[in-house]
Length: 173
Image (cartoon, rainbow, N blue to C red; front, side):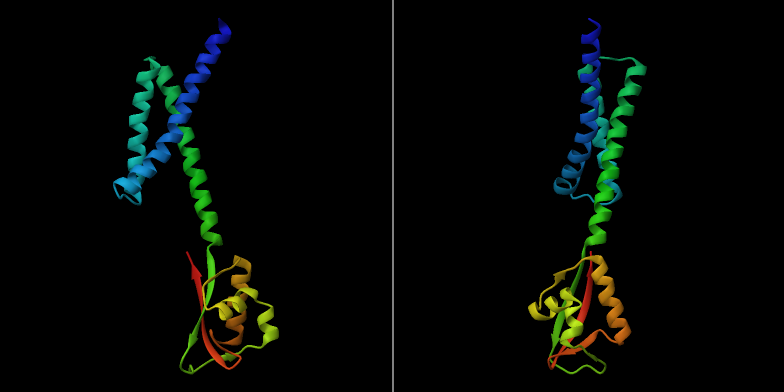
């Protein structure tokens, strides 16, 4: 008997943990894709979704005591909060690593430019790839900063390589 009561409590608290998880993803999906929300209004919609799902969870559990409701709310809200934190940490990580370099070939000779040799370019593989491919190149943040420092030391982001002129642009998300 005692064992079945513990299993029932675990099942109910697991239900409320899942409600916290579901409210986040359901709120993001409905708010962004269906209603077109963004920013603070999307967060408010997630909290509204959480409130509705929490009320449904209380109705399904058939327990009405204030102590149970408080425990269930705490479990659900902490789960929702942890999902929020994980989502924002992932976003910060992705933002930090969303760097790129692009090189635009110029038709005219710029007023100021620097000559870059093949040996110098070998030290910056992403810059070399951007010049050769003429496409944006995703680059690690360390190499991105090294390339910026290198061009700043040279004195210009306009370069001449193999007789062609390029404007170097740095991209962030």
